[in-house]
Image (cartoon, rainbow over all chains, first blue to last red; front, side, top):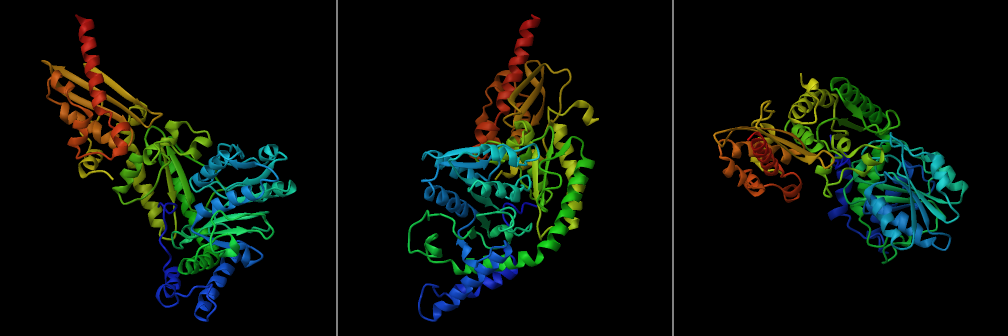
Length: 386
Length: 125
């Protein structure tokens, strides 16, 4: 139950990609007919991604190597191109690490970044964001939904504020695309980052929606592919896979979303009922259908992961002990948790491979794993162990 | 990521618990960092007759705690003081490099418990 870390490629996606490795290896830039099938595949894939997010024109979709590159192109591309208008960017404290590190990088180049805090449920207050706007603000970047705590932001409202102030609005939608309906037009979005693997497409693939007319420059120089914004020979198999993944996501989002949110709610309610001193991180209702982030007092997340792994359940945690930096998740700290609380969190991200049986099994074994670790912990109050 | 030995000690930790009438108690670490360990010792004729632990922390923290109780039990005070962090890690078939520093606190907890024992003994003289 760790789909956020990696998803299998949907077999239908794999099938769609296959012909583009050995048989149809043409280059869409070639003038002769052999390149034409690649060119068609590229166009169709662009249309499919555009349709999924409600983009008006397929040309507004640029293929990239994934969410990280899309975020880089969107934020740096807009920042550098619009430096004549201002140097101020607004983001939130719970953005994905790629957005945060891009902002830090820009800070070293005379850009100013304001990070808007979130409330205890991980929600951005649009009014606070509005107050942060200055006459130097050129870009607002807010994630659609947080992959770790699941909270979905009031994107439409934030977009409206951005546009009322003639500021570009970038949305990192990696955790949300294909899981919840998105419409870039209705939600006032100028740039939207997409990752292919997060919707059962191939790894190393992504896309960036760039609304027509957006002033942006490339971050990588080369042969001018993708309207000059993303040079390099197109990864046709990857692009075809992304298109197919987008197509499937659009068809199945509603039923799969309903199924997953039922599993999610079952898991959350069950765990909170069965385990004392357990809490939900993130918003109770405005959350991704596949995300359950739970917190258990007195124990540490990595030992929870190991205990569950021995029982065949794969999950992740916001604990420092599972990170390379030995710092707990910046998202959990941003929603106001103390370090020791952040250490005891567990993230379930469910997907197509998970059934009701899985949720039942988790609820069967999780209380025992928690109890065992609490019995070992010097922090557990004695009366809890009786 | 962890050796089989670490996983064995994590899943079946030896000597978990408290010793109510312990002769020495040592606590190291901090829940803010994600690891907190308490080691209890019972001493008879200068030997560690019993060693128990309670730990909040990751798999490595729990496994090293369990291992230190096995290494220390039956040893004289002097021998127990010679057990190092390295000995604990070696006995577990090694630890991931990132865990060597932050979670390998068990030897420190044991030494703290012995210090406590010595202090109490001095005070009772």
